[in-house]
Length: 161
Image 1: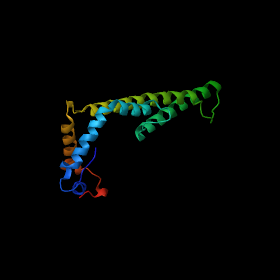
Image 2: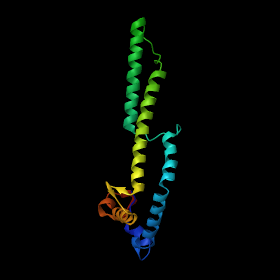
Image 3: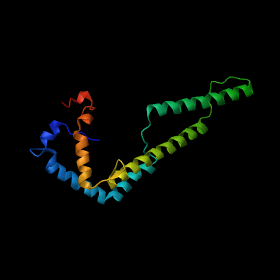
Image 4: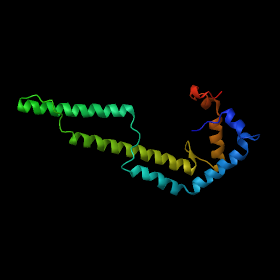
């Protein structure tokens, strides 16, 4: 989402959001819809790129670390009980790390596919389960960007007032 504060709108000139800005948005959205397949194809490259990692939240990272630690602890304790010795060496992590890696890859691909589905819908003009024309879509986006409720959620450090 983007926000249009009064200072940004003042910079658009005497017509504000209803002049050249709105017309430019309509033309841009029309072009994006016309070439939606091309845009989606370019973005899909990231979905299958093994070097690109979708954002891993701190909570998910902690959860994966805890699973990894539990796996290592259980493997180390079972091997020490079998031999009667306690070992300070970490257990073989190749199996557990591959399991963790597979679950991360599966989760990230699902998240990426959801994001691509949302992008496809937006490029088709589907917003809140309603099919919209280009003009209606641009009007809705401008209205949302200038909404007092949305502007009030801006980070105070940006001082939008």
